[in-house]
Image 1 (cartoon, one colour):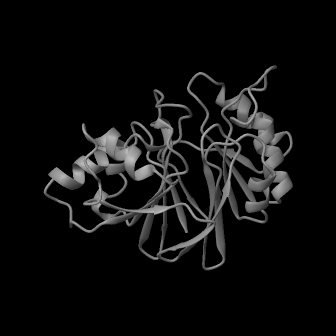
Image 2 (cartoon, one colour):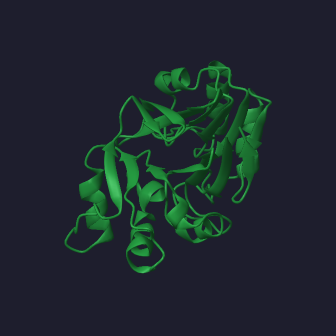
Length: 245
């Protein structure tokens, strides 16, 4: 299983990265985890959009789903799309919300996507997907992808969560957000600090922690240091990096 970081900036694009978007590949099957604003540009430098086999959206905040719009435009108007419908797994109601975002008047997107409501377990190509509801103001689902004995867990957006820790139990790689600096009076059930990302990795006994979703205005080095204070095997992702799982 290979992970490519298309975009990793938290809460919106930054000067060095688009917002959240991750390409996971195994046995020639390609899944996008989120498609946040600014991600479709660098995505085209990583993979032909027509070779994307499925899309998984953790939730419908703009920094995780906004570039569904140019993805749709490309499939409709580039002249390069095969015309096959792509499974898009997302929280219920995503078809209506994304159609309004993509088209004035809300033209349905059934010509591009086969919408699949997020389920506790599912199959996508060679991947088994398991999900868990996160701690976030809107419906958001962390996901665990398993293929041929390897496992990757992506938190999406979450505050501290026993459900996410259970989902990540024993995973090879935990791709965890760390959007909040460690300051007083943080809003609850929204994001993790760097230290909380490390605590999640330690509690779940994962093999490797990849810290992501750090906003451009937050000190990424400090987030990594905080994560390493409780989980030394932590790394800070960067746009364009690849990881073998």
